[in-house]
Image (cartoon, rainbow, N blue to C red):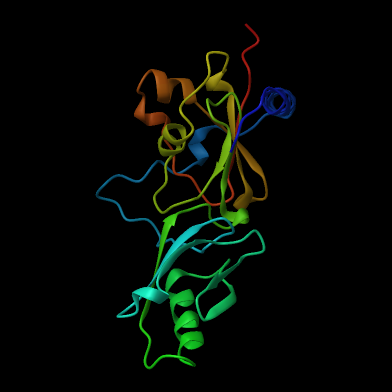
Length: 211
């Protein structure tokens, strides 16, 4: 995502406005959130679904001329040699592999296709969105066992103007329930107890400090 001064101002204004709503209405503490999974824990299996603007590598065994790396179009489709306008968005890589095999079977015998996601954006409804005083506010693809710290690393941490310990996590899977999160403690003080597990569709709002 390319950041412009106007976009930055808009993001900051939105974060301040939402932060004000949070101060008025109140929100739950992190005690209602599951902690980030440890290396020895296994969370429920997350199945990645391809999204628009994902980059995928399509490998057709023994047919390098039919293999290619393509970007899924904004309409969720992709075009390949001998297989055009295939719907990719919303499908698992193995599902897309089988569909491409079916399309290529009209032209070659017993095609074997492997689809690998080489750059992920993810389905829009499953992205984690970070707005406000992050170094690089953006929407990032959710991945299995993603933690709050993972998200903050991906967006480059906090700005100098961030009120990190007043940040709010809006959980879409719980009807927009809001949780307080302690980003300053996590990112700048290394307090791992402030790390929590993320879910698809989460929105992280980082307000600007008033001082």
